[in-house]
Amino acid sequence: MPVNDSVFCQFPTMETDRLVLGPHEAADAPETFRFYSSEESLRFVPRDFFGDPQEGVAKVRGFAKAFEEHSAIWWTFRVRVTGEFVGYGGLFDISTEDHNAEVGYGIHPEYWGKGFASEAVRAIVDFG
Image 1 (tube, rainbow, N blue to C red):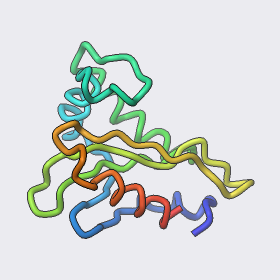
Image 2 (cartoon, rainbow, N blue to C red; image 1 turned 90 degrees about the vertical axis):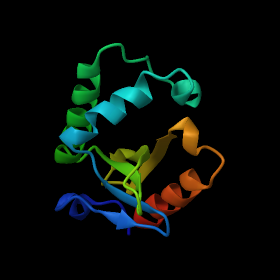
Image 3 (tube, one colour; image 1 turned 120 degrees about the vertical axis):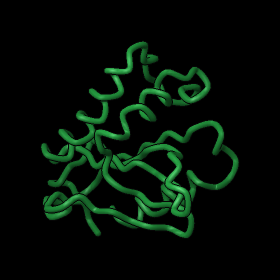
Image 4 (spheres, helix red, strand yellow; image 1 turned 45 degrees about the horizontal axis):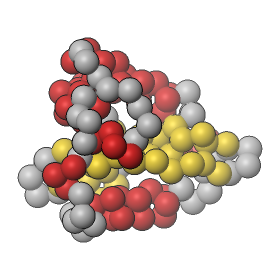
């Protein structure tokens, strides 16, 4: 599916063999804070560490706002069976004019090396 305005009609939820990729919700703020306040989590993500749990709330709101503004689609990755937070990822720097976007993701360290990033990114690329 080429990236165009039609992808922003309704937030797309996707499932893979092991994951559910869905919208970030207010209840995700603590996990988002935990991810962004961890030095290990951010080893490969060029971001500042969060020091205040309210930054997790703001980040989740920012993910929603980016979707509303048609500038990005950020999914939360959860294990299908347990609902455990694995990470996040999405399409950003979206150009509906050129029908392209950048892909980015972050995986919580306890899930590194288990193929979750590959599985999630494959679904995102297939979507976009």
